[in-house]
Length: 81
Image 1 (spheres, rainbow, N blue to C red):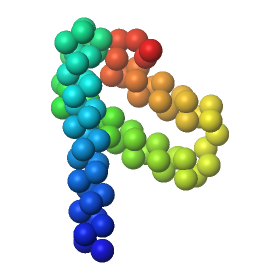
Image 2: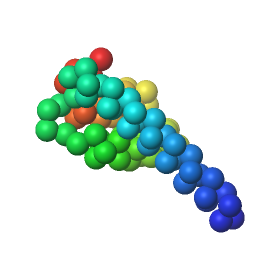
Image 3: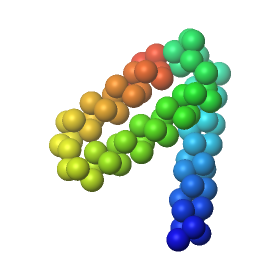
């Protein structure tokens, strides 16, 4: 079982690094909220992703899930998209 846990942890760290890479790119393009640290934002988005997965397993409806995504992005980016 520890091997599976290690693989899951490694996967999540890879996802965090992808978030971080994209956040740095967005910061360089002046797309992020001004006072936010990109490392903290990467951690925040990873936490949102984990919570989002739980909500999906709880069968939250699509509108509620979209609201979660919109709120998370509005906390990170100047404009959601």
